[in-house]
Amino acid sequence: MLIDIADAVVSVLNADGFSEAFTAQRLYRPEFSLKDLTGLRFTVVPRSESIETSTRSTDQFDYEIDVAVQKKLATDTVEEIDDLVSLSELIGDRFRHVTLETAPKAYWVESEIRIPYAPEHLEQCQVFTSVLTLTFRMMRSAA
Image 1 (tube, rainbow, N blue to C red):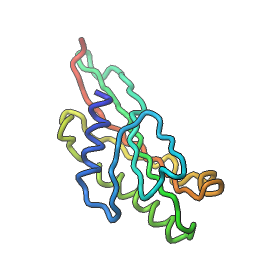
Image 2 (tube, rainbow, N blue to C red):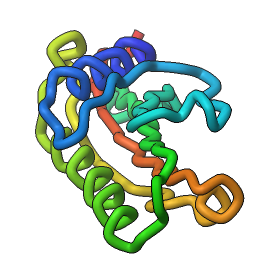
Image 3 (spheres, rainbow, N blue to C red):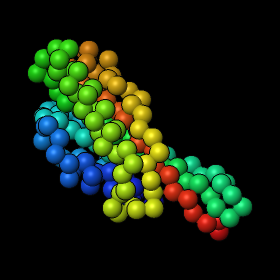
């Protein structure tokens, strides 16, 4: 189910009309060379799955999906970085109370920007990197 939810997140991102064009993709190792970072890049990474008892007959499954937003900056002005941080916030908002078409039993629980921007990427490579974690929950009958 973790992979299904990550794929559903990719589908939602690619279907939305954000201010800049991009194609989101699911990867396990979102590592790119500077030459690969042309334009805006969204990478979806399945992060974790946790299971706990909810009731005697139901278990709660929480799935965390990371969405990395990256862009090689033309300049590193405050305005350009502000726009990209705002874009990360918009992505978190986009998933609030959403039903994932390919995983309809999983529902959104939380959006958290764990890394609003990575200072070391800005300093060393002039690359903006933000990581947003989306949490989805599904209740399933205990086996």
